[in-house]
Amino acid sequence: MNICVFCSSSDSLPQKYYDMARELGKLIGEKSNTLVHGGGKIGLMGVLGMTVKQYGGKVIGVIPEKLNIKGVASETGDELIVTKDMRDRKATLHEHAEAFITLPGGFGTLDEVMETLTLKQLKYHSKPIVFINTDGFYNHLFNQFKILFEEKFTKSDFQNLYAIVSNPKEALEYINSYKHIEIRDKWL
Image (cartoon, rainbow, N blue to C red; front, side, top):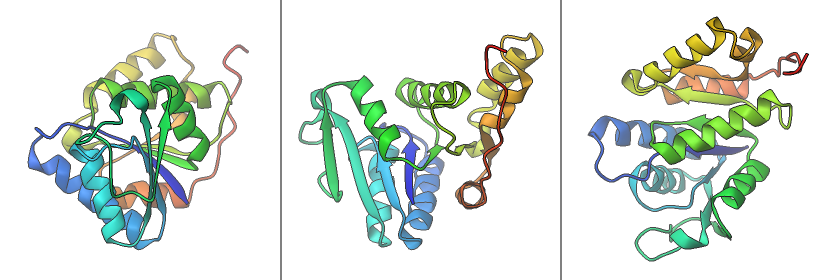
């Protein structure tokens, strides 16, 4: 299975986040899955890619040409796809992915997962989306989602667009047992 992981490219994070990326990478690799990610060799992205390879998985990186520079772009993956820009990068990630996992990350990670949620909401895809909420990292985001549902900015049905788990094992269990739930159209 091709599993797209959105995550940080920062090398300045607390150790617990790198540990989580290693754990996820090990599980993806041991099952001979393919990691699809942002093509970086730094931060959680780099740790994840190296760990997947170490445990026998395949890695496809997708990086915009502006970031395809020595020291940033992965040199150890099986394939590196260079796109024109970030929009093309996200489209290419979506084309190659059969499932999506989100680890902690910054603005880029949030951009990627929000677009993925929106595309599922609008029925452009029906692939599983799961957040690994390491140490409650996304609690404030999920509280904001709760406000969106309570204040009717989005339908409560859309809570079924994603899952929230606390560790990589649960994320892969969710993906492997995923059954798409048909949701109402946004506009009806």
